[in-house]
Length: 422
Ligand SMILES: [Zn+2]
Ligand SMILES: [Zn+2]
Image (tube, rainbow, N blue to C red; front, side, top):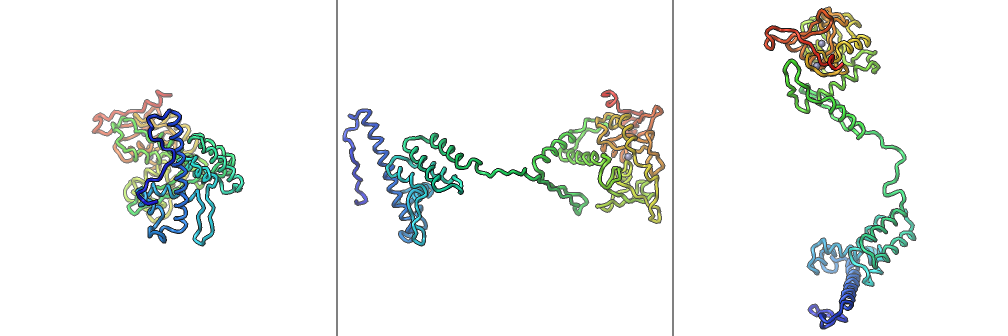
């Protein structure tokens, strides 16, 4: 047959407009079947070309490239045709041994022109999902069923049947069932940078991640404006950082921690008595090195860090020793008396609060209820570093004196929120 000759097609009626509806249907079906059979025949040629190598035969890198050129197709379109051809027809390996077709039963139905390329692809895809452990008989049986169904079934019926067959071949599903629960995966690194800040980096599994997110969310809400008049200008990240500090405060408030002998601290701060009293100069902190004496004084106030106080000769001093620690009983009484942070307008509950010494223990202040007041970490800092003052009123409850620039009369104020709530 020369290249310009139109192939002779049988039974092509001359006057189609005269045909009845049955004849039309029959004709359409007949041509469809011929077309599909012809496609199957084309596949045998393509598989043979693939076996011999398009490079040796025609100088093309691949059979797809050659066929794309021949048929005016894209590489992708040609690739689909070649892939199907190779799956349905025997090929030969490089050493000449024959490789049987991947889907012989489907190939037989295709050769009859009884199945189209989309359904063939559907069957090939299902066959690829058959587990490796399946016996050749079971595999052949599965393919037979799908191929025969392909003669007159549509896409959804084939999909349904393929699903059932695969479930039958592999009742455990694709992934083997793991009898052991997944290991928790939690990683955390805490590293000090050269500039004195610390990097906290972590990887949490779902369970710990969700609990962390819930905690941070609950503790990082913007602070309502208190009576010092400061609105909460912290960014979200800053509020979350403070929530993390609260987390540590809460954890450290728990009496049974390792290495603390029941006292709420793990970190030592070493400071000279003079520095501790005046808040001037520097102190030495575990893991860190230097910190300002002012910060150390605050950290030592409620023993957030364990203070080691040195005399001028550098010898450790016994400054009240254990008396500076708030006992659990005192803390409970303090929680009941103040009901939360005692600063006017502050909503914080007792749990995350520090027990502030009104007169610092380093200055001879006693660790008893008349010298202690509950403050959240924010207001604790404000009292230590700002111009607000706190004192114990004659009725035994703390009161706060605003700085002169806020109230020229410096009238004492109290937090009424916790009492109102109680
Ligand atoms: Zn304090
Ligand atoms: Zn507060």
